[in-house]
Length: 108
Image 1 (spheres, rainbow, N blue to C red):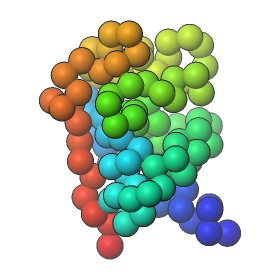
Image 2: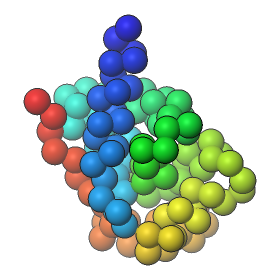
Image 3: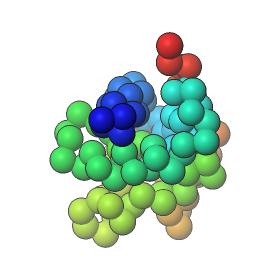
């Protein structure tokens, strides 16, 4: 299935996000050579919540908003995970987003 393969490629990039950093759905899509598939990256992140090795909490929208937070257990789990890594979040938005942003490498 092409979708499963795409999701695995998304997870491979997400696993590279360093501790204390975040990236966006669009940045992952661009790194995979599929710049217009940010929404599919979001679907992949939504599907990986039973995978402990994929740090889905480190993937946010292009403005640093925690748009995927409702897919985590509890009310503020995504925010708590980010804050445990030293990333401040106010009103569901990452403070100093540019400072914490990690740009993935283009995948071959």
